[in-house]
Picture 1: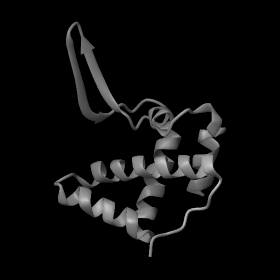
Picture 2: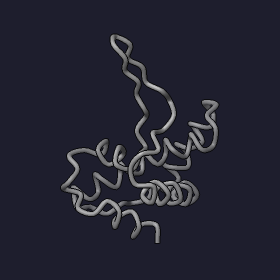
Picture 3: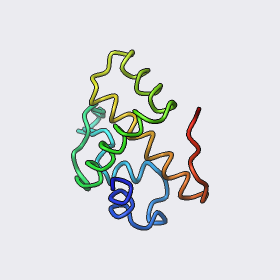
Length: 114
């Protein structure tokens, strides 16, 4: 169900030139603050973009982290760095978007790591 929701929300992948564009569309990119010569990057998400896509990505990521060793190890790595669970999930969601984008562009299937 989450996969169908992600595909429906993204639509045509050709609209996006990179996975970073999809991340921005989903509101998973970090917010930036610029004023005069001051240029800062905050660490919280923007919460702009498609909230349905963001919801689907977070729930799909939680499922993927349970069943895929590569994503599970990535989540464990982020947690061992001291990141909060939701922050670690957001990092894994970004990785999932990049994987989905590459699979869609290449036309290949995902093969789970053993």
